[in-house]
Image (cartoon, rainbow, N blue to C red; front, side, top):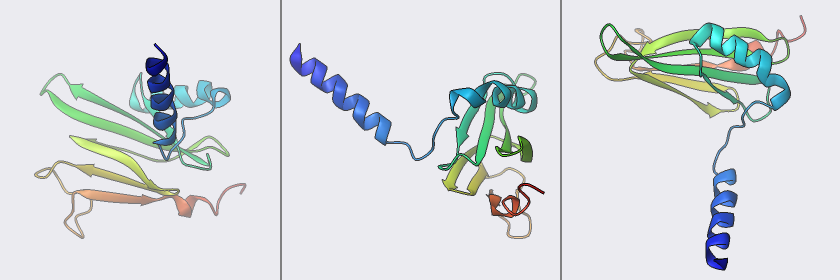
Length: 135
């Protein structure tokens, strides 16, 4: 019994240290959940960057007409609750790769996200939205 308690405690400690992003604080979830649901659909996942200045909201659902996964996303600037980026990608994924950098990618064989460089990955730099805070 004692070893089971220790194992559970270690699992809890390790899992809490594993993530580099934070979930949105409870006081902000009501309006943020509403924005996420309105733009990406109900049951959206919401992750904030480390300092909480932006939140990434996404929902991966299956299109019933063709059984293809569609990922819809929005990025919200928390200081003024403004959606600064939004989009969708077929059979794709999205993730934080830095404090102000989000990477959107999709399966090879799909339409390129950035035709100029012929890639299936798009990098969104959110630093450009820091200069306009408070204006």
